Image (tube, rainbow, N blue to C red):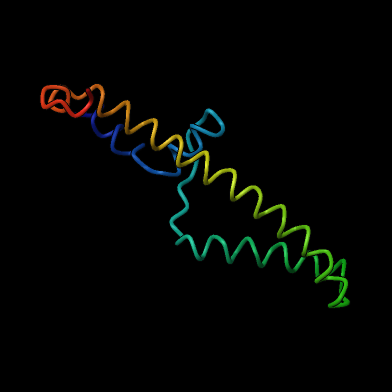
Length: 106
């Protein structure tokens, strides 16, 4: 069934993430591991900042607020993600007749 195939094609965390954050589906799914994706992004920003701040003490000084920003964004999105996950779980369980019949949602 073509419709079923489309459901499974879109069943990807990156598609769901982009839909929730941007309102659209991810155009391309990145098959790199989480570690690889983080490392690639780190290399890009590190190389760029080393070009502008070749002196290591200047580079380290500019990285402090960069890491502070990244940490703040990471913390906020992690908390939002956990709240969204809990909300979805409640919706899934509350719409499940089996759980209602057994009294789990009372």
